[in-house]
Length: 150
Image 1 (cartoon, rainbow, N blue to C red):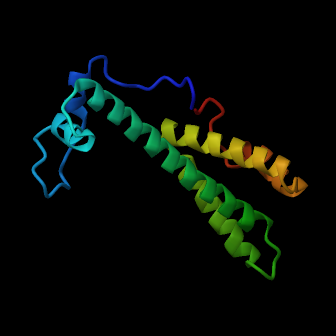
Image 2 (tube, one colour):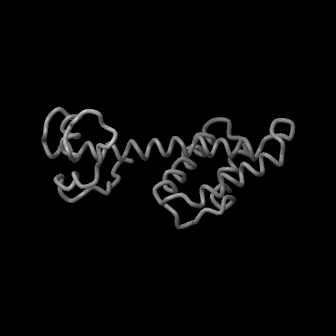
Image 3 (cartoon, helix red, strand yellow):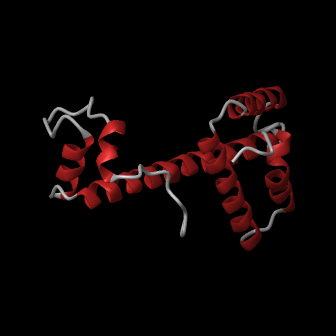
């Protein structure tokens, strides 16, 4: 994430156009500036700018965490022995995961690719199980995900 360019508005004042407080019980303000100022403790435009960037990075990290869980679940299902998960059930579950992943947004695909890369690197440094490394290597093509995606 270091050196990553965020897709932030050109001016901090434009932040107010893309944030909602619908779930808030407290009247923090009618726009993002009020909410972000309350979070930061003061109403400086740079505070709003920085906080929105942090929200976006946190969201991507949480999407990547979910992606890791999904990849690991698919690996367990795909590589389980017959007496652990019935083969027909495992195949249906893996196919369902693939169908869902093919409708993922570019942001989700990017998080999925990053998660896959991190899992493969950790596996190489850890147990280095050949079947798991092969699963990670074949994951993208095996699920029919777009090569140009993220």
